Length: 362
Image (cartoon, rainbow, N blue to C red; front, side, top):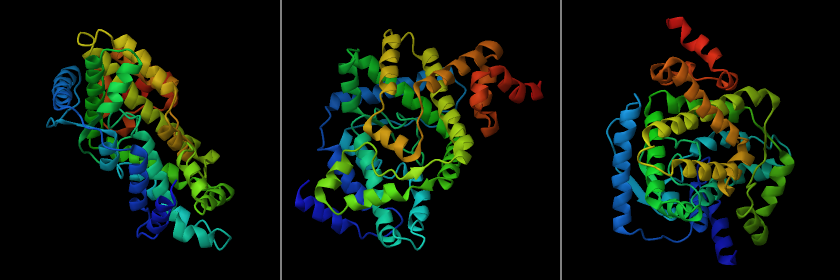
């Protein structure tokens, strides 16, 4: 890292607010790279395929898609710039925890001024790394903080198709379908608030690791060490999950498994005739999920929010079994309210879920 860039970063440390978003922006821009022009014809194809996806998803589910919106095909730099604060709910609850972590001890003098910088750097690193991997707005299983635009990251989608020797047009439609389904899921009034509340409860119980935080703080004083932090998937991790947090973590994992599992189930219903290579794409996506990117590793290391491949599969199997046994109307009950979502045990035992959710109304 150049001395000029390091000096600029130091200058950015003194920013107001619980999270230093200006520092986050500088780091994410540095990692996302230069803008990459998207051919107009290719951008229009992405928009056309998204409109087709909206029509097919509307035919396959009772979820209300609301007013259809055009996709926004973007490059990595544009996605990073537009989404810098989209996942702020992952760090803002930690601001007070960091500022109070000194407790009169040796960390106090460093944590009060550097807490916002730590969180800003963490988010900048995460968004910067994710920009090179993410295919669309909901690709990592975590929703943005608020409903917004439907972004498709064109260079990453095209690279995924090429690296896996897949038909590019089918992959574009596959990604559009995935994003449209997730947008419909999180358009339900209760879904996003329920998920964000789970995250907030989980973060509230995390404990700080003073030793790890001290090591990370020291890296801010040396340009070479700071550069190593930017390339380290562990990022600025310094949080410990307690045994008391395990039930909340499992609730989050179950929530994410249902969200992804239902999307996979619905795509199997909406896409077969349009996507003859669906099985190959599914296999390629499963391989991709089994190898989390640096940005996803940061989330896993920072918060412990790892969603393993078998949990995605578990969610898909649950949705398929519910629809097979009790019909699609029963599966639609998932979206009534948060109490209709299964826990991890019910994901493995749909009959237990049905006894709790379906039988009382029969």
